[in-house]
Image (cartoon, rainbow, N blue to C red; front, side, top):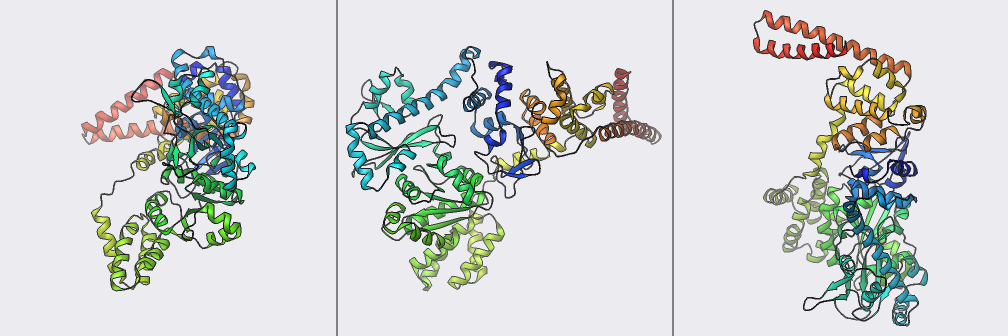
Length: 609
């Protein structure tokens, strides 16, 4: 593992400083249930929370898709980081210093680019802010923001800036700081000239909107002109730190308000979002020059919860209709319900709020409709209920209805449409069926593969699984496991290996004397074992068997071990009986198979004696 590049004492310091609930709750809405926390899994689509976090053991496990591990594994899986990158991120967050000399040249190269890009973005944000607030060239931008009604508090809260006119302002700024142009180019802040050597600034004479992640790191930027120049908006390109389909403008500010209200308003523009926040609608975010994605919805569900509300705010019927049609599949796959709020013609959220205010906006929001009812209503308004109109309505609605995977929901909407336009329900159903039958429906490959992992913890003998769970949750029993050679009687090799890892971890320097503390605090043994292996399946088995809330006591543990030993003896006796029956019935094929099993048993018993 990449952990070798960080001293063990530093890994322990990071692990002891971090609260896994604190880290995961940045992404998943967690609810305390008993000793653990549960929420909707960020790694697969689910209706009912099966994602569990144990603060006692500092691990997580999803009983739906089988993903599990410690805080390092969570960041590695969710953010696509290496172990070293995850450890470095946690170290930075919790103030743990990792000595630079412990990194290999390759490790330095791998970690350097991400950190350097984030640092370059932070410095660029500082430059843009200074240009807006402290540079004479920024006066025109400040005046523009004032005319748009944006107050100074909002300018400060969102770290708004200004990119002055000119081709090399940012280039010169970074040159003075001795930051390479190649790095700045990778951040998307400057562009290489095609016809000659050199670079030029991407953002020029624009209001600048820094884009943050939930951890308040600057990932990229958006820029808007102050006149009628095109393009009106310009965004950073995708980089190794910025992904539009997983980033939402304003989420770092809105996340707690989304949690509190269990609702999120989603708009399309930067100024739309600023207007919502300025009018006290703090549970709002904006997409970044891209359609709403499944990744966006999954992230937001982590904040609003499984029954949370999504309100999509659009500035015209046509824009709302197109967006609603696009988003049906997105919300359907995530088992989330969305409502469409379309503002009166000629208004966007920004202009509507500044003209009519908070109460009027919230009144309009209270009348927002779910996606299919919105599309039905829009189609009726557009075409009317003449014969020709009803044919066109049916033509427009058959595909959106076919896009709904939930058969009950689809059936109810088909019934509603049939009643509204006065067409036989069976006829509507047939139209939808034809569309569904003709389109190439590709199965969601992600979930079935992961669902195979659902039974990871069920692999192996029931007694063996229980014993491993006991070893992980009640380490005081480990000396008894050793003295009775319990693991030598295991048949499941994966579970046997995990048991050996538990014993190995117990015997590491200093851990033997800390067994009592580990058993009461619970945050050392399991997380350390998970850290010591690369195998994803074994990590998930360990997490699943560790996260239970079994109440262990020495008497119960000894009883379980005795039951296991008795069970194995009975198995041996049963095997001898089966061999005798196979001999008597002249079933040589079965006899050979049984004799091989007996040979393995004899070999084990010889090794134990």
